[in-house]
Image 1: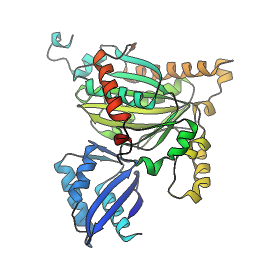
Image 2: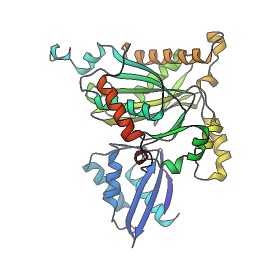
Image 3: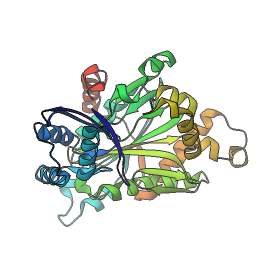
Image 4: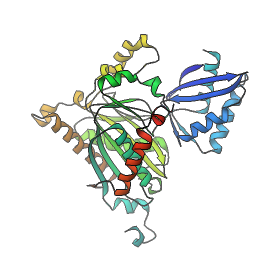
Length: 94
Length: 277
């Protein structure tokens, strides 16, 4: 599954997603955004692996926000809400 | 030297009292250029003076941002056909066709306070050097968030930044001329059916020094090499005026050269790195 999401006032986010029984089995966040340190994006992909994609988008956004705060990851041109949107867009094949 | 200065001297003051290192590097391959930029930032010490490096690309190359997928963004068979190289950068951002352009890189320690910790502010601060450079050429440029510089409302420079080793590395393009058709023959777009429209759109939104300058009126008869020299002189002055320093011609240290060779081989020339996403 794949999605392309233009972050409002930001960059383009392209998500590749595989689900197994509604749980994330593979996630790749690509695009022309920035993250500091860059390795933080790999860490987010790993952190979200195994997460169930229920109906609550806000919960996923909160989890991502909590994780980036803990790991001191700074986004530029992208944000947690946009990652959530792009993941659900891929999931729903919108 | 820094150790002998009184304690109350701020980093800012120490740095401003010195010449900064300027490396006018000429043309290199894509993997060499990216390896040198990384070697400079990885070797940069906390109290070291900043480096400004100018360079070009031979052969022409496409660089993609750290998070982009090479196969999703670039028509690799077309690159091979044109003899155009490709490389993944250590900075985020988008795919860039480095052809008729001057590229700069800038490295300073975060602790120096020369640029803000705030990413947006630091893009603008460093970008002001280019704006002053364009001004020397008689072009009125503006910074447009997040990371572009425009002339007459059209993009003339894109910039990308990373922070590692407690340092800021920013590199960016100064478009001397642009061949949008050639660029898009090597860049993939999400919907191939819309490619024609996208190309027309980009032509409206991107410009170059060549397009904006009235060379004849400003410089009389001038060769292509002469034009590049004028842009280099203007941009060097732009950095000097913006930061209130003198850029003194320097070169890479032995450690930087050795590291650049190593990371070029192990990282930027490797399929593992370039195809990693």
